[in-house]
Length: 134
Image 1 (cartoon, rainbow, N blue to C red):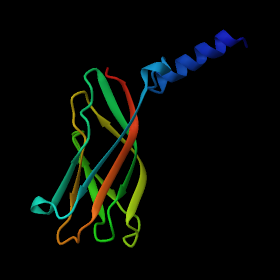
Image 2 (cartoon, rainbow, N blue to C red):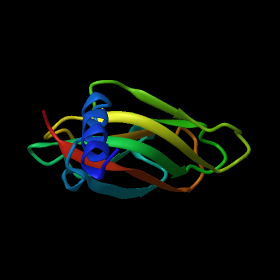
Image 3 (tube, helix red, strand yellow):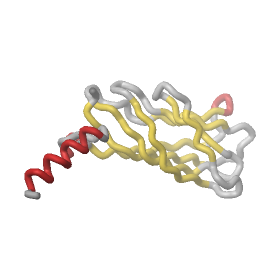
């Protein structure tokens, strides 16, 4: 099989799998937000940059420093509420693979419920990529 045929098969598979045929159309995305507790109304909200027009954000990973008294947080702004729990309550951080989509103009946010939490630095990092909106 020659290189052109292999390349065409690869492009065909990329189209079938929902991957953009042009790899340059994919742009890496990484954003970090932080807030100290206590927070107003016991809810800390961390906002990330809005998704650019003409692009769709695909989040693939999230990590967070939550301290030992907070067990989860939620990612919002995608049209669904996505809960991210700590796997072990005695650990102060979380790192998980995810798949979550944000449409053009959407603002990804993380909401942390922090009632009666001692002073803690909350840090959340989201990683993924921007693809052309279709």
